[in-house]
Image (cartoon, rainbow, N blue to C red; front, side):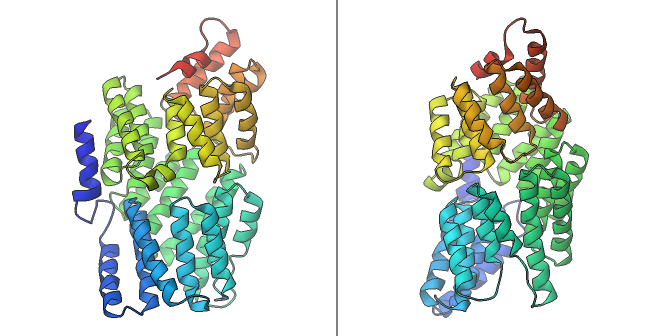
Length: 441
């Protein structure tokens, strides 16, 4: 545990500014703009550019401190220039910063302000849609994305708007259960990002997101190709490393998966990566190593107030998955639901309630998670376990079969639990895997 803490502190505090997941371009831009605003303190454009650069840095490092630096620079820009079309860019970037910190209502408000000043740039509709989607208002999110159109402007500007439209609509298609439609849109977004020479991290993210959509659809072959494409373009990219680790885990290559998760955590210590690594160690039968990773999950999640805000849902899932602090898991999920009403927050609450022994309430909550028709093995697994505990054999079998049909290796532990539960439901002899799961640590 001491080794992990030291590694984490080194990554966050003592390491050079260029982590393995970065190429240094953003650092150069930040330094340049920081010098410029010192020389010209009334230059609102440079402050807005500095804020945007810090946001890009946050994407690359995963360090929440960059979002606060971004908001500080953007606030200065808006102090110098507001209620003018020229302020739209800073307002839009402020909306992005709020999204990064899971302040969804604030993000929507800033996007609306950016649209109201009348710059003619439709980009704020993208952030407005993102905020609405996270708040569970998928219909109005789709309406917001539909406004991402640009009749006039350069070819690059039109391509940028096209990218924003396709990449976001892809997510809504995925939520609606149209996996192939989502993948086709994301393929187009990757092509556009590449052709317009977007920053390498943005192109890598697009490939990573395509990989995520392939994996959710159970296509590990194409998921692997997408993650590798991201890593080829942007070596050390933490998201793609974690994605490839997930593929290796699904393929049963647990040692390679563990090594990849280790690299991802070394670049950007996200709690979900430590949790996934712990589960890989569980699958390998290395309980001591698993426990160390589980301790790291909590350590990362409580590093700062912003971390606690961002990782509420992740921590609720983690506690529920491992039978830990179940009252806290329910509390965290309910707290997240106060600001975020998407299908995955409903799922987190349902899963936490089930693990706490409240399966009847969990089933009612789970209906919200399934309401959009999302085809995700995790959702179906959770639903199947809940209905198995309620004694509804038919529905439990339906959901568990569907989870395994989508992706028979969706999780190193849960996929096997799904198979065991189906076998038990077919005979109902011996101890119930449902209760074993509920008691698991």
